[in-house]
Length: 370
Ligand SMILES: CC(C)(COP(=O)([O-])OP(=O)([O-])OC[C@H]1O[C@@H](n2cnc3c(N)ncnc32)[C@H](O)[C@@H]1OP(=O)([O-])[O-])[C@@H](O)C(=O)NCCC(=O)NCCSC(=O)C[C@@](C)(O)CC(=O)[O-]
Image 1 (cartoon, rainbow, N blue to C red):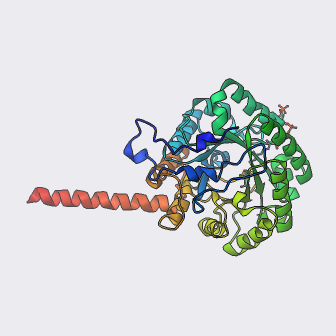
Image 2 (image 1 turned 30 degrees about the vertical axis):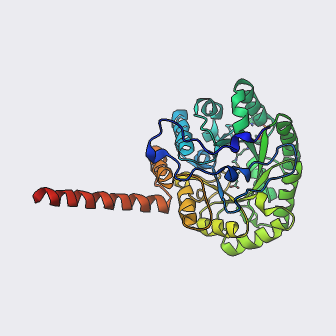
Image 3 (image 1 turned 135 degrees about the vertical axis):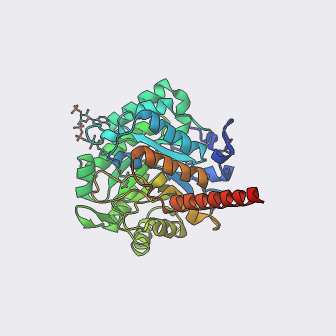
C-alpha cells in the first residue's frame, strides 16, 4: 500500500469556514511517523521528532460505551467535524458483533456516507475474520477508501479481560488476530494493534507488565505498524505508567507505541505527558472525553482530545487539529448524547468565550449611551 497520501501537506477542504480550518497544517514530516510500510516491519521515524500525532477514538471507543444509541447521520457528522478540524487519524467505528456492542452497528453506512478529507486516515476496529470480511467487502465497492483507511485489532494483557471482551483466552485471541493481520496485509491494509488493561484489569487487578511487553511484541511480530497501550480502567498514574513503559519499551520500539489513557481518576493528561516524555509520539484521545469500554465497569471515557491539545500547546511538541473547532465539536456531540461534556478544557474555553461576549456586549451598551 502506498503511503504517499500522507506525504502531502494537508489541504484545507474548500468551502470550510475559517473556524473549521486546522490551526496548524501538519507538515509532511508529521505524517511520516505513522507511515510505516504494511508489508514489512520497518518504520520511518518522523523528520520532526516532536510531532505528537493524535488518534481520535471518540466515534468508536467513545460512542461504544454511551447509553444513547445515536443515528448514523449524527455519527457521520461527528466524523466530518473531526476530520475538518484537522485531526489526522479518526477511529470511525467497529465491525464487531452487534450482539456484543449494539452501539457500533451501522459502521459500513458511516464509512459510505462520511466525507474523506485529504490528510485524514480512517480506522476501523476489527475483532476477527468476520469483521475483516465486512471491512474488505466495503473496500471492494469503495476502492478509493483503501489508501486512506486501516484496521485496528485488539487483545489484552489479562486472561479475564480478554475472555470478557472477546470470548477468547489471550493465546486464542493472538492466534485469531495473527490470521486477521496476515489477511489484511495481503490485501494492502495497514494494521494497528491495541493491548488493553496494561495497568490494571477490572477482574484480576494489577497488570503484569512483562505480559504487556510480550503481548505487544507478538502484535508487532504479526505485522502491526503501531501498538497502542490501553489503560482501560484509567487507574494509571505517572509512576505506574513510567514503570510499565520502561518494561514494555525494553523489547519494543517506543516510537512505534501509542498511549491510550482513560480518565477515570483524572490522570489522563498527566499520564499522556508521561508517555510523551518517555518517547511516545502517538496518543489516543476522545473528543469531549466520550465513552469507555463496555467490558471495563466503572471506567470513564478516554482523556479528552481538547485536554491533550491544550496540554501540549506552547510546548516543544507539535500536534494536529484546531483546538477551538474540536472543543465546539465536544459540546455538540455531548448535546446529541444528552450528557455533560467531560473535557475540562472545552468547558474553560466556552466559559472564556462567554465572558468575552458579555464584556463586548457591555462595552457596546456603554458606547451607545455616549
Ligand atoms: C469477538 C467476538 C465476535 C466473539 O464473540 P463470540 O460470541 O465468541 O463469536 P461467535 O463467532 O461465536 O459469533 C457469535 C455471533 O456473533 C456474530 N459475529 C461474530 N463476529 C462478528 C463480527 N465481527 N461482526 C458481526 N457479527 C459477528 C456471529 O455471526 C454470531 O451471530 P449469530 O450466529 O449468533 O447470529 C465478540 O466477542 C465481539 O464482538 N467482541 C467485541 C467486543 C468489543 O467490541 N469491545 C470493545 C472494543 S475493545 C476496547 O474498547 C478496548 C480498546 C481497544 O479501546 C483499548 C482499551 O481502552 O483498552
